[in-house]
Length: 172
Image (cartoon, rainbow, N blue to C red; front, side, top):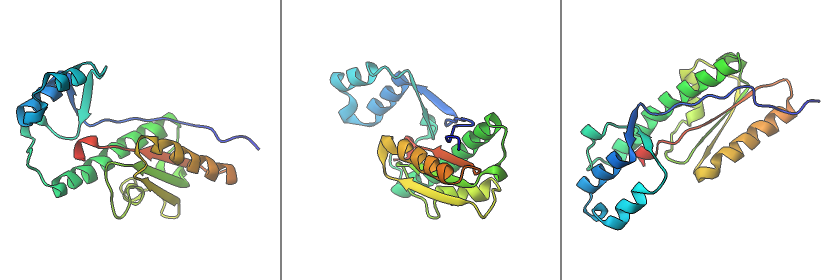
């Protein structure tokens, strides 16, 4: 019996991209406590060149509600996941109907039904595949997601698993 292996990888980011300087200047303009040389120093020496955000800074409402942020997560987590999955499946020369198990991992939002269920519907995947949603595990969530997929494929060597991790940090 062969060991499970990765057949494809795909990534996606929100379309809006801002430099670290732009992010800091916007934060300092809108939040008085950010107007501090020490905070600016942390921002500007973080080795982060740019960030992708799920909103346009020009139209950001700094008084948005938790519901507004949740809606942003719901919209963008599905959109970005679909794009990453398409790229992964293309890389693996596979299609959505080839997937037998999907694991969706996130810690920046919670959806009910879960992200995996939404992706199954949005990507017209088979309805008889197995799924798991891992939420709230922070930055380390990808590893348990990969472990679930590995365990599944190890138990069912002729099956294919897909792991999607998505974080919309600009929604939390």
